[in-house]
Length: 179
Image (cartoon, rainbow, N blue to C red; front, top):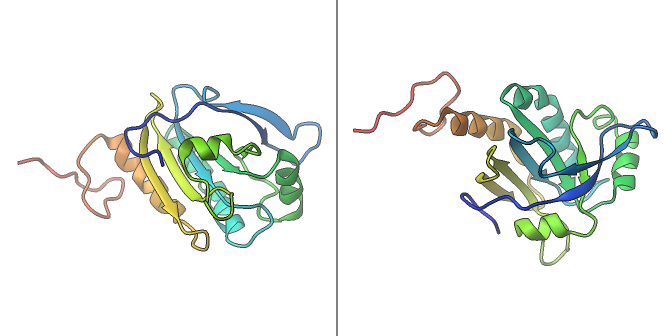
């Protein structure tokens, strides 16, 4: 698995950005938001139970990520057509403000090293990538356990501060001083 300090892999994937058939699809690459922080999170499968709770949580905090000069990309190994059907079908996903990437060849999941060996789907993984393309945060959860999206935002704040941040540090808190 790629980890902190590794370069984020290149990608060029079809993505769903709307439930409107005429505007639903676009290509997203690793260069699409050049110069911005990227939060790339993976979920195992569409039309499941834990996944939409996380995806909706990222959607609710999307403006907060954008305010920090970060874009959010969600991805699974499902196709863009499955993503579109799920967005149209699930009330919490209809108005998502970020792209859902279709990693149907499993190339991006494999490049990050987060394919589940047993199921062949993406693990519940999150990566924060800085504007230079370097992974600054990596987290993987069991397939049955949802992640804490507010913790991802808190971690982004800490990384962007470029300071020493103690445990449970929140934006606006004091930084640690090296002795």
